[in-house]
Length: 309
Image (cartoon, rainbow, N blue to C red):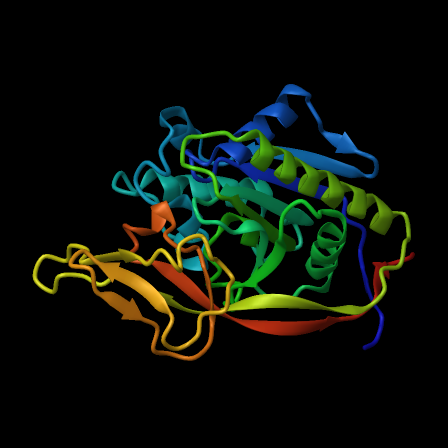
């Protein structure tokens, strides 16, 4: 692959509290703001508590999931008295960090999230972005205390629904397991290490380092699976099977157990071989998602460096 160059990364936004009960990002941002960190080497830093009303009451959201409000449709919707708070907040954040898809958008956004699923440290991205993939590769090469994985949500940027999609380059960090409303030292420290490594990588990139091409593995989102439900009431009739619980990213093969009914019957996977993730995520019950399934893919990435004048 041919070498690729990018302009320097001069503006970096670090976001947390997009979901008000995911405490790692909340306290990451609070610590940055307490230290008044506005510059790191050649990069200006903006730290953003994304959903302050939800943080104040330690809830995922007030009216609507903020991390589903950054599609072009929501960002351009007229504001009325009936507009959900999170749609208004998304438009405020788009004005502050974007506008999405424009040259005025910040160069890089990292948004911190927690999951109750046993996923280790995951970077989540949308379109193939060589720069983001090199940041992932760098973090993965340095962090050995937990698995570090890459998840791709294959959506056009106009339909990308989460906060980080506002930036020119972007990724979300998803780390767990951690219960909602709880702050764990081990989880916080891993997230802090990932942030420190990201800033370290930016300094190397802006200083003229060349990052050699390579290949990285990623998990490409394929589909979501709901719990078995009563067709009349919609209530659950089964839970995640013990053999699947806490086994995010373990290959799921046809015949493997996925649910255990309340009457003791096992429901087995009958599709293609795929990798489950966000298994039994607390916040996804309302979305009718028991887990997602992904295909493992390999992405070739070119060497990159900063564009020189």
